[in-house]
Image (cartoon, rainbow, N blue to C red; front, top):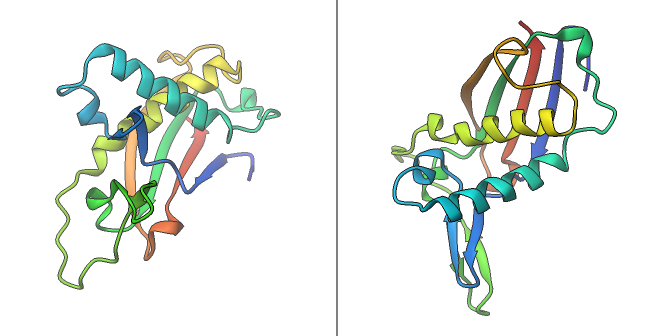
Amino acid sequence: MENKNEIRIEIPKFVTHIPKSKNSFVKINGQRLYTGVNHYLRSKIVREIHKFVKNYIPSDLDISHMLPIRIKLEFHSPINYGNVQMRKDNNGTYKVMWKKPDDNFVPKWDVDNQWIWGKCFNDMLTELKIIPDDNVSIIKAAGEVEFFEVENFEDRKLVFVISKA
């Protein structure tokens, strides 16, 4: 996981949706959070992402020797991630639905709309006191999101790459 110049934190099978109510879900997407979502729901979604991300940050993580840092997000998902939906299956249970894309599939989703993951990751580094603050004197670069295509939905993952700035 760690070397002197770079630390990689992997979150396998990241959540795709947050429950809005018992029978309604919101797909995690930064653009969606600020377009047509009231501030109560936005706060709930961010809290849920914080809780999820927190589970993957090692409790003994020490990056003090690297400060200031830069943080990049590698977003590993199928090319048709934008088509992933939360639906009821035949048993009436809500599940994430995905099917393999056709060979000629052309995506319409934007990788930069996944910025919310980076924001929440940075917040958790501060909350867990791994860094003293997430201001510009500590985190010099953040927000870069790079897409890596995977063949199957089950292989999706987020990888946060922390390096010395």
